[in-house]
Image (cartoon, rainbow, N blue to C red):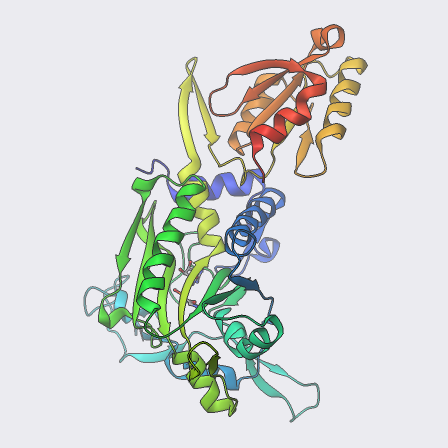
Length: 435
Ligand code: GAP
């Protein structure tokens, strides 16, 4: 069950500094977003957990950070120039544009006007490289990070001396000139992907496909998304991308309904064969064990960082009544929370208390985000930290000065523990479980 509307999440994100509309002072630009002080922490934490599970916790994956701009032949070979398009119609009356696959009737859903014949609209953004007039070349902003991995297949294979099966992981920006936007960051024109291309021996692809579907579902659950808010949906034949033999979406119950969070596709040997054909390079794999040469198959778990961030926020949003007052808190997994600890003085006009609180903050910061706040009453300070999902608040009071103890408050249970100030660092290391 999801008990929040997208507008409440968008509101919280703006008010507390998670996500802002891009270039808002100029009226913004459609479906482009900026991550604020808390958003950048949350997003970095999501990417770090993905990288850990894909690269550090395994011994069969290498990392890559390829460029956004690529030789435009890449996109001819990949099929994106020809096939990465939506069929669109325009309303002759109100001039609005619609994706034909999302229309229910034959008239304009906004004004009932007559629609034009469908036209194909490529979603890639085009720009130019070169500074000499008349000698520029059209290039595209990559619409997926995956192609950077395929064109580097040979480089990575040779430099890492890998044997199949092995994967290449990459996070990075992707760009699509989306027509149907809205729903906050869900469908953005500039967004980030986290993609793994896992190269396997043909014939072993189905086994690895099942493995990655389960593994990716498990990852979201391991970071706190409730199982009942996730489901798998297999693509029907007509929905499959031009390169895919099979695809499962991991869907999340977003406030607007079940929608794609991540796709796991069997891309077969399509991309490597296409690049070999168009570039003229030999992209076969030589299997020493069998003496065979073949083009590997690829299993691709491809997730959106922005959609993951949105899903983690939506799933964590909780409202309850405590002593007849509304309490809103984000029950984010501690490893994802933007701020891990807030150190709060009970009395801000008592210098010894403020000094002790500063000492505690200085002693624990360094490995994660810690804040000090004395700008309101303690009740209000707790509510502020609850609303942004800070797992622990450490409060210094008058007694702390004599007994050397502080109060540690847990975000979810609101239980308070009295512990030695000198033990706060170890307490956090143990509780935050950042390994
Ligand atoms: N390389 C395969 C690929 O790009 P995709 O299903 O088009 O497949 C993968 O995209 C993931 O990227 C999606 O599951 C989604 O999480 C994210 N994504 C795609 N388009 C997006 C958009 N316009 N805004 C935000 N995220 C998007």
